[in-house]
Amino acid sequence: MIADLPEPARRYFLYTIEPGTPLWTVASISMVGRFGMGDKDNPDYLDFEATQVLAMPSGFVWKMRARHDLMRLSGSDSQRWTRFCPLM
Image 1: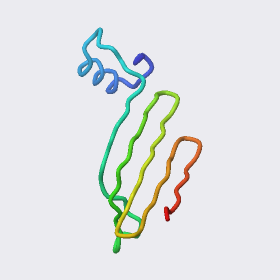
Image 2: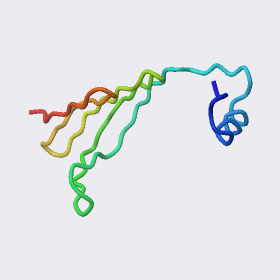
Image 3: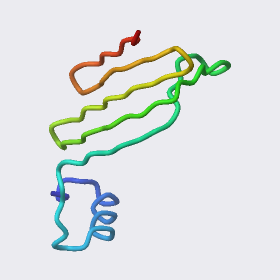
């Protein structure tokens, strides 16, 4: 899997992954944080919760829900689409 990578990347993976270690191709990640809806001077952050499923090399899906006071936002993102909409 690493034969065609540049030499520094091959060295890194050979050093960090023990031979025989199972290499998973799918990972599910949960996260919480703040989602900026504004600009650098006024980020207008919304608190968010999200899940991301990585299925390499096929792609990913990122789903999130954000809120701040009465403002609600929900959406998803992948290699093929991005959809976000306000919730009422």
